[in-house]
Length: 254
Image (tube, rainbow, N blue to C red; front, side, top):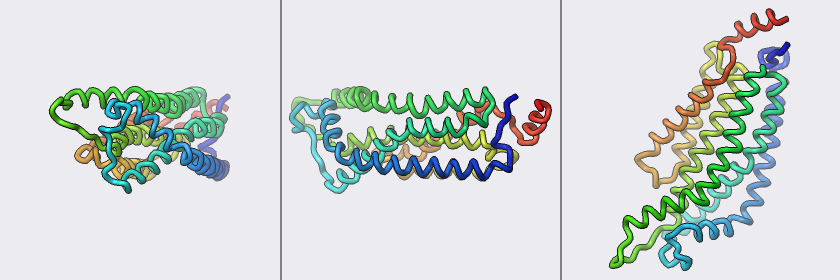
């Protein structure tokens, strides 16, 4: 007999306390990752610049037009890399937290979501930075390259374009995980939609604020589409739609 412990009001406070403990652990590891990557970021940026065709091995075609923008870009990369590095740990902690209180089909669904968002998505991000973005930039460069015109590229803009897509994937992953866990805990059922709207609003606002200026004109559209897809995926979770249905189902099982 399987029971979903999240709908037991007597243990609800205990689950919330455990979630806060997970958040505290993740915050500590995130801070440590930020510290570590802050010492590695210069080398990482140099390696990636060598991968893009505009550098030509000499960096003569690249320029930095805004030193402060470059500094902000470095910190954005540190935060982003630290978030991506934290994702596998998030997956392990959340699965340990949730597995004992879920039905087998719920547990399987949540495990697949965690694998997709914390393993597959980071791998996609790595492949994009190693191969995808350099190929895209090479194709773009071939369309504007001319023997009679000297072309110089803004290095910060190239990083920002790659950062924008990466932020979209990361926020998309976090939104799916948060919404999925909230649905499993019953926070979005029985008309309790305020929490869902808050998550959607925070995720959408975060994307709008973090997507670089290179995406102006597409910023709002990309943010809305990304969060809409995350919400739709989270709705595929195989749980009972109402707490009352669940309670009656448990009574029958007993």
